[in-house]
Image (cartoon, rainbow, N blue to C red):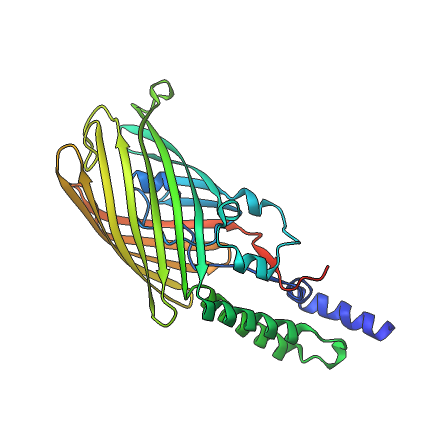
Amino acid sequence: MKKLFWWVLLLATAHPGYAQLKDSLKISDMTMPSSPGLVLADKAPAAIDKPTNPKAFGISLINLWQGGAVDVTPYWLRNKPNLTFERYLNNKFPLLQTFNVSAATFRTDTSTSLSAGFRTQVFRFYYRRNREAMLQKKKEIEALLAVEDPSQLDTVALAEKNAALREMFDVQRNKGLVIVELAGALAGSAPGNRFKDLAASRSGIWTNIRWAPGKFPLDFIALGRYIWNSQDASIGSFPYNSQLLDYGLSANYQKGRFDLSAEYVNRRDLKEGQSYDRLALVTNFMISDSFYAVAAFGKNFDKMDNILAILGIKFALSKEIIRLNNSH
């Protein structure tokens, strides 16, 4: 018994993740969505965000601090010791689990804008083959870690095998699924950067529908967005007192820590009958589980000054951990 105690202590010290990962699995994604407020204002790197598992807390900065956002997912602010792998996988309507609220701000030469937004997944479905594959990976992880005598462990091989299985799980979790996400935002601006002049000027609601085929290297996101604009003057693709309809499609490719997408969005002014469009290439790089870099280049909606060039960083605090088994 004494020998066993020292082996357990050694493993916990040399491999701090072992004890934590024995009964749980961390949910991680290669991308972190932009705040809906930045999307509404056309300041986000992507106009079509890929629905992913939201982080407990996130901070985004764009173009050398010209704008930024704070995101919070209340559900993940506390640990979920009773959330099992099967419950997470079989939850087709994860509204509370993915409900995220955010606040964003950005400045121009003449004004400051503030916005608040939300996003949530109203439907999530994994293909049966994909779900069964993930359950099989879960069993492999459990079998790998269910060792009674730590003295017989090859800890290096264990760590390598465990990492490989978890990487395979992340790949499986992002293929063979359909996600329907609902998002909305309200934005206000302050001409002359005076707080007393701050007033609501724009609002919108939209849906992103993600389809990731099981055996295809790309996944696709379709966008439908309705925008009410009540600004006192026309600004770019936001005409005065207008209703706008956005619709578009993006194709996404993910490899390792890179996530690359190409998107096209058409914007229709329902009052004036005019159309604007946006074409962009967006890349995300996952530096670590908590740190992301994002860049975008292309053509924005505006008729003039429409070169899109955005560089940003995103930082997240994550508690998205689920139990591998049902035991307590």
